[in-house]
Length: 201
Image (tube, rainbow, N blue to C red):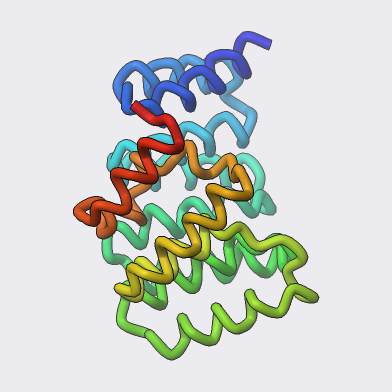
C-alpha cells in the first residue's frame, strides 16, 4: 500500500526532526487515499507536531467530515485547538471523543491537560484521579500522563512519568523531541538526558 508506506515514513521523518520532508511524505500519503479519514488525521497530527496548528485543525476537521464517529480525529483536533488557546473548543472536542470512546484513555488525558494549561487545576487533578482508577481505563500511558503534569507545571512528576514510559518502552517516546506538550520541560537537564537515552538525534 503506497499510501500507508508514505504515511509511516513521513511520521518517522517528523519524529526525527526532518519536518518538511516528513510533511511532504504525509501529504503524498493523503493524496493517494484522500477518502481515508485515518490518512487525513495522521497528516493533521504530524502538522501538529510541526507546530502548524491551523493546518492541523483543518485536516482534523476534514477527517471528521469523512467519518463523524472517528474519535482520534476529535482528540487530535482538541490538541491543536488547545495549542491555539481555544480552550472551550478544545474541551468540547475532547468531550466528543470521550463520548465515542470512553475506555481508551487518550482523549481523557487530553481533556485533563487542557484543564491544566487553561488554569482549571482542580478539574485536571480530578482527571488524574480518574485515570488512577484502572477499572475505567485499563491501560493508561505514562507518557501521556506526563503531559498533564507538564501542563500543571509539576516537572518532577512529569519526568517521573516519562521515566516510567521509558522503562515500559512506550512507542510514544519517539515523539519526545517534537511533542509541543512537553516544550516546558526542554530547558531541564533531565530532558536532554532522556532524549539521549531514547536515541533520538
